[in-house]
Image (cartoon, rainbow, N blue to C red):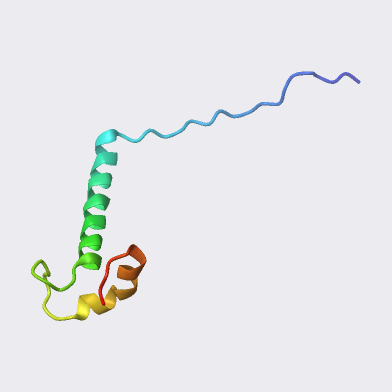
Length: 72
């Protein structure tokens, strides 16, 4: 019986490429979304607050403490 010493066939894996323009679009989108979230967390219902009242402040109260914003 003769055995072949050749290595078994290993399929090549081709990685997909992502165009930089499409990647940049998503980076800008999520960057703006993050800035909007930080605005609502850090706003103390003062002069820069979009909605009136304390609703947003109460919804993000714990996140404000987690990020170090004073609110008491």
